[in-house]
View 1 (tube, rainbow, N blue to C red):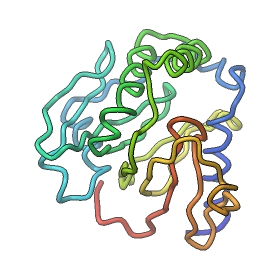
View 2 (cartoon, rainbow, N blue to C red; view 1 turned 30 degrees about the horizontal axis):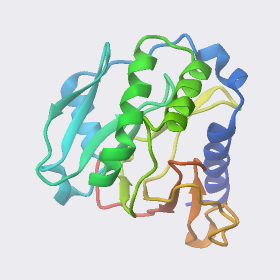
View 3 (tube, rainbow, N blue to C red; view 1 turned 180 degrees about the vertical axis):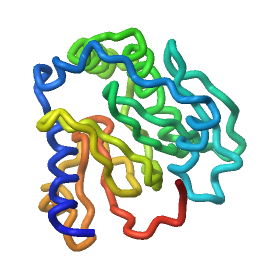
View 4 (tube, helix red, strand yellow; view 1 turned 90 degrees about the vertical axis):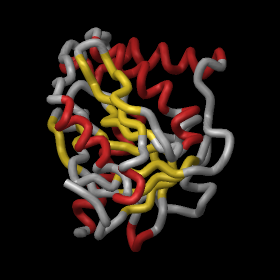
Length: 212
């Protein structure tokens, strides 16, 4: 993986986490594409290591938001997270992420499906954290994003780009300074993404064991 691609990936994460509402304004009225259910399930499950897929719950995106397509037998839940109408982020959460992060993801998807502007969604989510409706993970845990189908909207360019497979570890309110990281992911070092109650330590996976 080239350093230039990695630098671009890192900058996209930082900008998407910190972008002002106006950065999204031109796209706020767009609705996420609804994929055929089988295609959506395959994409969601591609986030997980192969041995976890058969037992993972799967959520799929439909016209009114996310619906559960099947239950879990191993504590994991896979979903194609949508935090922008043009983004698709296959993610598979462990039991703790399912309990604490997934509720926010589901609500975000519901509001996107209604065409709610992103600044308004973000304000509701922030209020949800303030009131305790949403909480940070209560223990260490993992969320897999091993899919090669990750698509992320870049508010700087107004374009969608792919980003590499990786593994995320829950790191509520942790910063790159806390872990001694420069935040650029170089030389295989971890870095913090999405700082705040649902922050993650990200480790890139150059040769994932998965999926489409």
